[in-house]
Amino acid sequence: MGYKSIHMSHKITVERAKESKIGEIDFKNLPFGKYFSDHMFVVDYYDGDWHDAKIIPFGDLSLHPATSAIHYGQALFEGMKAELDPDGNPIVFRPLKNWNRLNISATRLAMPTIPEELFMNAIDKLLTLDRQWIPSEPLSSLYIRPFMFATEKYVGIRVAEHYKFAIFTCPVGAYYTKPVKVYVSEKYVRAAPGGVGYAKAAGNYGAAMMPTQEAQKMGFDQLLWLDGIHHKYFQEIGTMNIFFVIDGVLVTPGLDQGTILDGVTRDSVIRLAEDEGYIVQERDISVDEVINAYHEGKLEDMFGCGTAAVLSHIGAFHYKGEDYELPDLSERAMSNKLKKRLMDIKSGIAEDVFGWNHTVPVGVYANQ
Ligand SMILES: *Cc1c(COP(=O)(O)O)cnc(C)c1O
Image (tube, rainbow, N blue to C red):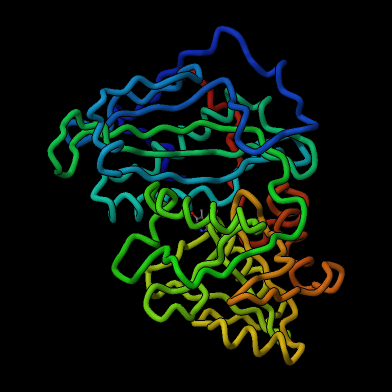
């Protein structure tokens, strides 16, 4: 519990919202990312350190028109989820993995890193203050969105010396409710070795918007990206890592090229699958291999996974004019089992064998 020792300059002050907006929310019918909890955390970086850490009522930020992130893209984000365990305690799923990835993204974008104690304290305090915003309905959770961007008021291109890091939260329901149809892109590329594919950089999403929109106009939910060099190996889906089950073996692209995101859900699925005794392979997997497996009747499953959607089955994929239909959900024993176990751990129902959940400590007084 190293983050308990708080550097003085990182003390978090609290200004409570005068009125809660919680009465306006229908917790039985939560869209993704439309409602925002009462408070947010904000901290500014200047003179080589983070200053003025505070929790304030959720509201607009005011920005100088030359704010460098808007022009040159030093901007990144994270995403994780909190739920209430059966005793009503807020639990956050693997926040230190998100903290670690945030700093990996920041380093790639020449942005400052966030100290662990500041990150964890901000989350503990925010969730203590907005505890009643954590939904207790099944499949619902509190989505936590940390983000950082350069705030330099300067139009020249250089690494900024001023940044803002903030966290807000949103109560959310289930993300995709039915199996997704994905389009395998032969034309567009998301990332290449040496690039920023492994960073949760805002710009990765900006670059993916138009190709994704084209796929959606053709009736697909998401793009399934291929590698940037050979246009042959699967990478990931827009917001999710990709898994295949071929002849009983769970296969997912490896992280070694630095072109895909090191998903927390991906890592959790791999570890749970190994724990269940399945064979897991992290390796290159080509479209040809998957289509051959399909024709031989060995392509048993394809699914995506990420914090927002947890585990989403793929109903069909499209490649070079052909649609390939995946088996009925009832036949996808491995992913159904992994999904259930992962969701049960995240809700504090199943035993947390890997020690993944962070329980927000009782007595983190918001105005301390
Ligand atoms: C966030 C994200 C994922 C999923 O990562 P999780 O940590 O599981 O939420 C996968 N791919 C991309 C491109 C992402 O941005």
